[in-house]
Amino acid sequence: MSVPRQPFFGAGPSYRPRRISPNGELRRGGEIDWPRWLRLVERKRRLTGRGGHRRASALPDAILQLGTLASFRLEGIDVDDATTLAALKPGRDHNHFRSRLAMRIRNHVAIMHRIERGLHHGEPLKTAAVVRWYTLIASGLSITSLDEPTMSRLDQLVRRINSPHLRLQPAVQEIARLHAQALADPLVPGFNGILARLLLRYHLGRCGLPPVVFHPETDGPVLTDESTLLGRLLELIDESYDLLLLELPPATAGV
Image (tube, rainbow, N blue to C red; front, side, top):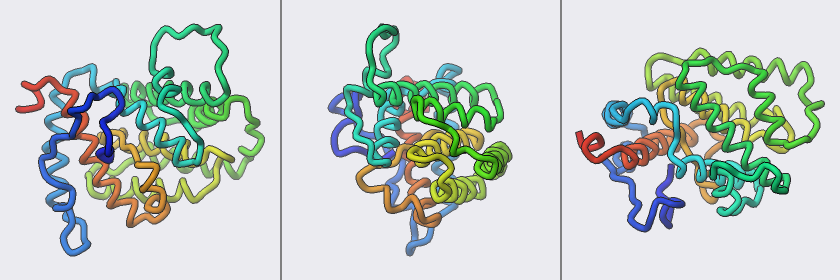
């Protein structure tokens, strides 16, 4: 994810991802330097893979919070930090009144948790699960727009996510292609971008890659074009590994 101008929420004033190499060096003459990017990512993959069983099925709160904030704000939905932080707290009073927006935020965080568990256990994505995501995020809105043609397109999307490429370069290229197509196809009214980013996370995870968080203020224009989206995804994957490495014990991250 992009290094914020201010520290990550809850990460403290000293937060700065430790970079193995600047992202600018991943491009040569406007072209992606695939050999360099693959070397960087494979190295960080190995380092984060030493982080233990827990990290395979759980995300740092910084990613859960920032990912939720960014996804909603990219759709023009105003979400404040306090509401998202509250959704991360365990043991909330279930009788406490919550606004519809607060419920959507809480449900989004719950879906992100569920995605990580599913990826950890190697579960294939199911179309019915994606429909449940939509109903949770919509918080009571009708799903009558999910007619037979829409469900057919959604089912095709899910099948492609469940059959990822084995090699990293074509896998990331397919991820960018499919995400751009999902954004362009209005599968669900009002929440298409949010749903597409949840599907993106599952697709990344099926390829053994970490979650990415787009910057809502600057990344909107790059998402609809496959070529610009691909370049941005490469940067965000690299940066996501940096954040995950910060979460590892020093002895492990420095191996």
